[in-house]
Image 1 (cartoon, rainbow, N blue to C red):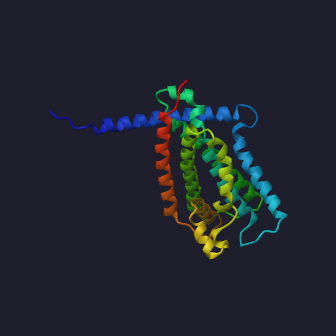
Image 2: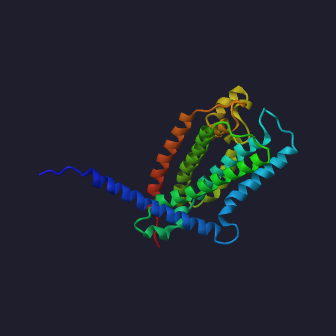
Image 3: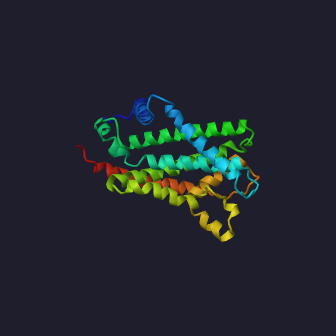
Length: 269
């Protein structure tokens, strides 16, 4: 006698699984916040204060330097450059050696290696997004920044940068578990990317042959999308959303496979 699957039971199973996953990620997020920022001083608010100080400092410095106008306000160029850069740096670097540092947690059956990486990335994403809102509000209230032009487009650029950083973080996390020297190379890797990432320029400012080369870099598209949403049609932007998504998907799949392999080789002591 055959029995068909009960849709209600299946729905209940997935609901319980998602609820359990949410509890695991929530607990890991709280643990990460306490371990990294503690319970004293300004704690989690440092995630907001740090980029606010950085952006303000860069604006002050640039205000005393010769800056090509390109029809872009200094505050708008700084916030659309340094805030996505902060998002990229924090998410892509904080996953390095994450599994090794949290090895005892993997004794718990409910916690998987990917949970540790997702929780740490979510913390960085949440903190940097809160920082973006705080910096934007401060610049708007001071009259240095015009209102954003297209919130949906700006959000798309922000999420693309976060996804790209997470995919890169997965790959770096796996490599750092297999090769100790990778951890020391992450900062040089991030600094070497700066000149070609798009943080200091817009594609329209480059000579035509260089524009084509710049658009091979996926981070450039993320910056262009974000700036198109924040600044609007007063600036010329060049980007391809599909190109970025291909990089994100491919990088995530590769990263997941590498993390799975690295997790199998973890040594419990």
